[in-house]
Amino acid sequence: MPSEERTVWYFYKVRWGYQEEFLELFRKNHYPVLKAQLGGRFSSVKTYEPRYHGDGRADWTFAVSITYLGEAAVMSPSKDADIARALFPDQERFKKEEQRRFELLDAHWDVPLKEIDMER
Image (cartoon, rainbow, N blue to C red; front, side):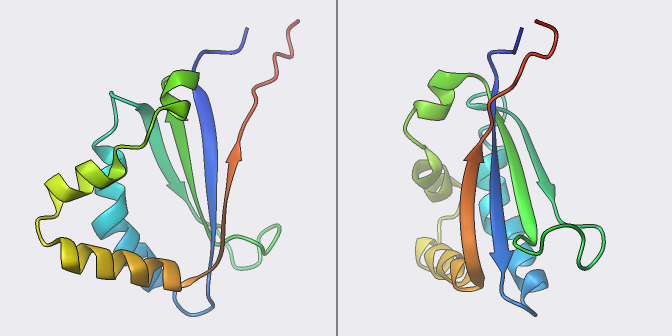
């Protein structure tokens, strides 16, 4: 039987030549916000990029897998803004860097996954 946890994949396609800058900003500003929710809303946060240039489909360059503790956690309002205010006192700088992180993207999309029980 599928677990109560719910996994969502978040895909990003970073503009050519800006992957390192995007990763630096993600690591600095967004990852700590996600990490702060481990054990509360999330059971797992993992990040990925293709191992080799041109692996598979070329429509993403960075992905985040977040495993929520259940459907209620997925549907609950995000606390990202409150966590960011607590973690980053210089909100003007934080917001400017987050705006830049999104300027580096060609695309971003979310894929909530539905687990299939192959044993039934």
